[in-house]
Length: 247
Ligand code: SF4
Image (cartoon, rainbow, N blue to C red):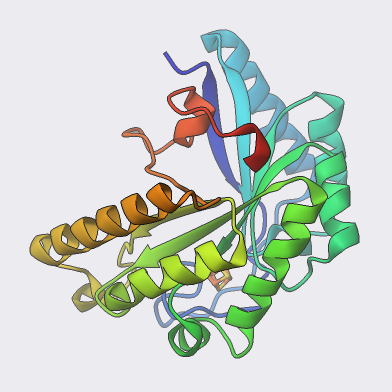
């Protein structure tokens, strides 16, 4: 049995982007952007630790938002993780990363920083905002230099599925440590953005071929398949040993 129990923790709605597929900003109703208070965050953190203790598991956190770094108590929360020696990953935007910020996250115990690529430059920037693609590719270097692992996640829909092979090429060329993708989950009146089962099967075959070709070439990027419980990555469950030089 997997020794970890992972929590995906959304601490703020604040974000520099307004992605077309975002569930926070979906629908036609404006709502105030919410962030957890420090008291709520402490309470949640210790609740999670208690839960893991009761069930004999180790906690693992995926910290997200919005862009979690925009939460005023982001660094305070990281200090709490470090104090309790709890491992975590941050899933956020590239805009506030630089070498120093990445080194500090690593100091507090952040193992991975996950960024999104939702297409090649034109499509990704259409989904997210102008300049987002180039900024994302650039910040992979900051993450790698800090000693954290860089993860690129692609949300695949009918709109961008034909660009996935090109995204894989860009990810490998950028030196990202891990690539993963998942299917888009409609959150409003956008059901037509979902792939049909046949389209998804075709995409899986294309990706499988590409992954194998890159693996045969010895590419540094690890192509991840999430485990069936949608929790930890394969290499965190022990099913896969990531090469020492990719850590
Ligand atoms: S970056 Fe994430 S939180 Fe921000 S708008 Fe896009 S999907 Fe939503």
